[in-house]
Amino acid sequence: MSGTIGRRDVARGAGLAALSRLGALIEVISQPAFTWMFGIATYGIYTVLWAVVNIVENIIDLSMTQALQRIVPREDERGAHAAVRFALLVSVVPATVIAIAVTLFAVPLSGFLQTAAGDRATLPLGIALFAWALPLWTFIEVATSAARARRAFGPEIRLRIFWEQVARLAFAVLLFAVGFQSLGLLVAHLLSLTLTALLAVRLLGRYYDLSLLLSVRASPELRRELLITGFALLPTNIARRLFIDLPPVILNLVLPGAKGATAAGLFGIARKIATIPLIVRQAFQYVLAPLASAQAAVDRAGIAPLYAFSTRLSVAVVVPLSTLLILTGRDILSAFAPGTMAGLPLLVILVLGRAMETIVGPATPVIEMIGHRLLPLVNTVAGFAAWAAFGYWLIPSHGATGMAIAVSIGTVLIAWMASIELRISDGLSAFDRGTWRALAAAGLAAGLLVALAFIVPRPAPLRATLLLIAFFPALWIGLRAGLNGEDRRALGPVARRLRLVRG
Image 1 (cartoon, rainbow, N blue to C red):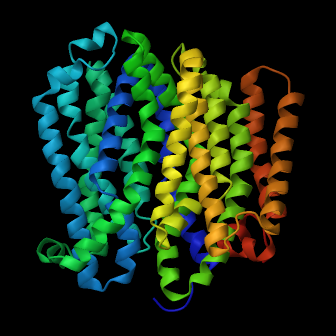
Image 2 (cartoon, rainbow, N blue to C red):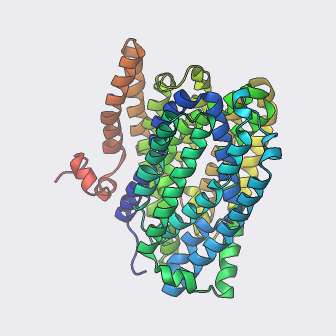
């Protein structure tokens, strides 16, 4: 790579990556449909099984998804293809072996899960079928990360929104219409993953030579570098996944019968809504990982303006967005099946946690990509310890709400430790004068939304509608007042269309 990477590269990539992550918004729309069609308890079992798949996938992929971000930009064409092939082999093959084992032992495994009486008979078959989501999802994750390693951030849009998420909803509606009950949601998910995996093969063909991928061999040095990098990042990735997916699993295991399945479903719903602010963080995480690696190879000092810009933009967007979700949380949950309103405290706590995690910018992926292999492990251990300690203290007396508090404390601690470490090790500050300006402007935008919520009388749907409409001018105020001229110009045509800049 020649030259340095500028804010325009970050903004363009983050915009495309954010669009690719809008599948989370599709899920917010599809989740109410799933609960009405299949019930909260069945949705809870689906949440638990999908959580287990995600946890296992994050273990067996050996962090190849992120190792590729660091290594592919530095390799020639043959080396890049060899790295991708090796990453696919060491992740997808074990995933397939595990899927076979789970299929064979589905009956005894089903005894560990708590479910409603009506779902008990079909649970073994559901586990046997859903086990094959593991190799499919592993392949999709590694294949799309290989495309991102080429700094191609947009192609995930079709895969993760139109095919994975929309197809899942379409399959679920079709299966429910023909009479599928507890198995319908699991089969719909599996079908959508199968379709997405087929399209991921085509995606690989756009950025790599498929014939070369099938034949090239990685050198011992390249294999060693991939494995060392992956293993160094693995504890962080596992902990990050556990923070997201282990809580509903624990709730299902400790609470009996339908109560355990319902608690898992409520936590899954609240967690998914709270994921919306995380779209911003994930967008910059996806973009800053390969860009920081490439920039570090040219001029390590060039990472500072990219990191600062990412942090300012994250603050300007996330603070008003999180405020909107908290203010309209009751209205969002009212769209779900009866009984979902019990998840409101969880939603508020998890949204606040995601906001606190996001406003320090993409510190975690930056520190992972620029050579600090030990620090992510230190952060992970600290965050996990905090989660375990607060969970042990709060869960017995506060149940799922205590779990939400403990998870939020752990995730926020990891992000903020990474931010402090970047300040000490590389002089990268999340909170400079520009960030405080962005935070003040975002606070003003959030304050306007809160004031409107108190001024506008009920009924609640009217207030929620007005808040949603008011969010966009409030966000514009946060961007216009919170970002300097150079930041706004880096947003390119979007800034001109929104009149954030002149001309």
